Length: 258
Length: 313
Image (tube, rainbow over the protein chains, first blue to last red):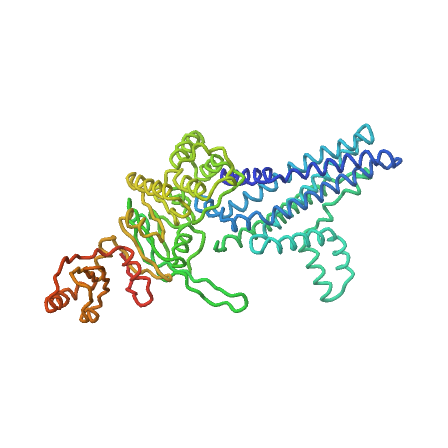
């Protein structure tokens, strides 16, 4: 990473921290503490299952909200407030600015996810008093959740490079919801015929496949994750996020900053 | 080689939501600014000053034409490392302190880490913000933001400095300090290109000025050369209490006081006016040439029927 991208990323991270984005951790900590105490009292044998499902789902949802709502403002806020003028009048290329912003938010989400992961493991330890070997797969589930954030951040940046924050939020959130049902969409495409099949297949492969990145349920039941899935999901997230980021750069490069 | 060479820069925006229609913000602009010059870019609001500056900074792309700064293309990072820019009504990252902001901009401009703390201290001292170095910018007044804006524009010791309305938002003391600062930059051999609509600032500071109106260059040159091109006026004062009728035909503006009459009229009508006063047996007290100010020249250029052709200089 060149130094300018690093400095822009570091400043983006600092902005998120000072804008109290990480305060969501307090809400998360309260949620996990409450869940752990409550589940320990009311459930028999399934407390681990509940804590893992609830914890990982909360990690995912909190991160999605941050990725979308911070991501959509990364570029538009800088244009509206004209803070961008004094950055781009320096030896900073537009693609470096976009890339720096992306890494800044991705870094914020990585730190956020890491701290939440500690909370999930702490709650798990509280309810079951010890870790099991299969709990290691939770790390893979968390890694996949982080990959979702990477894709979503790139998409939010892509939309914010040409549309208003509100529309960008709607687009990004819609894609997250549709992408969470991407496997069902692919199943529907297989059953359809003619033009319908063609359109459904195109849509199914165009939207980000978030459902493949959601393994919360299977790791909660202690099922292992294949190395092949880890490899393909990593590659998929890398390619999809890179394409969205390239799209954002291409649009932003041509944009007049009025 | 000029410090800034603008070669036919043009900008047309498409306005309207459904039916897009072209709106020309800047007509083909040709302009050269020499090294070490303080150059004033004057014009009323909406004349095209900020559009020109944004194109030079690479924030807006020209519809036609090109420009070179320090003989380099506008998107050349080597050139950008040698220029400074203060936007109009600047707004900065308000979660940063003044020191952090300058540190960030220093990093982006490639100022070495070892030199940055010292440079930042010097800049904050220079713009009178030493005591506010650790204060977040969200607590800054408009004038303080303008000062930190000037500091960030010159932090990296640029060869060419672009200032868009640098006096905006400043109190009289602040304006004086900015004027002193611009003189200091000039003495250091830097090229300063600044836009303003405050003509007294331009008159006091600039080696040359350009006047732009409705996206069109109306004149370029030294203040003396431009004002000398405006038709001169004279002031006549004589004893009397009434205005002779012949003065109306000489385009005179007359003011009657208790025992004297004062008339301002075009220099070319001087002889006719003096002849008339002699005929009327009025006693002349004084005849004084009226110095044409930049403001009068400016007004003559921006009035709809006062257009003169602009040209490359």
